Length: 420
Image (cartoon, rainbow, N blue to C red; front, side, top):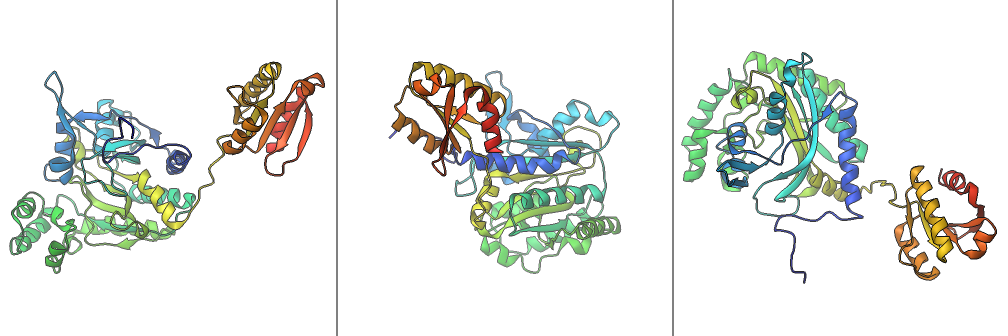
């Protein structure tokens, strides 16, 4: 056993599996780039207060799962448990909302950290790609983001995911519903911690996954019955835009999501092939978050999609991604002169965008060809003293086993043509 192992709840991402993760990140980002979203990167840690205010004091994320610590200078920091609060903080700090072109559209990719009980699909460090549209209240924006996520998943070949949709109302109608829900919850047989949560944010209780709690929640008042006319109209427009775009969704009156900042539109992407960790991504509108963290009123909407969970969903559906080979050509030199010549050819091929590897360490033909096989290369370039004397290299097709001489001065063009 090694002296050190990865910390509990984390994992190492190594080839060849890492190629699928890269492909998923690229596929999720692709539709965002075509819709005007610019890339943003924020620090892995922020001031604790940003998440306490933004994510919510009563959430499990803040109360139980956040990695918080004090620096030697006495500053209270936390590893980021989610992306939205950090991205909004960065946009506000840079005054992007004052540039005059709202919404500010940003996308990001990175690792997030929560101290959770590790299980398949739930890790203490996990990877997400997210998108935020900051500074505009428009149902078309909510619909746009859901459509872009749907496009990303479909481009990967995922088919068996569902989109759950709900509205959480706004500051006009939410308080009326909150009061009705609190009245209902006070009459239930709930433990002290859950009752405390019900007083701070009763919507959190609806999200409780415990069967005994869910059983008691049957008959709880539903938010959709309390929506004001403006929220109803907004939600209907989001639904109509999704329907017109051919994006299927399911109305879920109990969907609240795990963060306190959501208003109006909330949605989740779920995949039934993942067992209990069925959510592969989700998001919603968070019109009051900017003010919560000390900014101006900037109605916004966004989502985050889990890269780890998406990879698991692809596996559950048996989807094998068409990942480009790490190596197209493997160069095998036999002798010192051949090493020098072939190394120059390898460099030129790489400059031309051909993924090329080289037999290092002076292996013999047999050992080098074994490595060429393992590399997954489509072709091998072999050169010995006799080949060089004749001004040629041997180009071997690794699938058919056929081999032919190629003039040294034409090798780059020949290889590119063969791969094309």
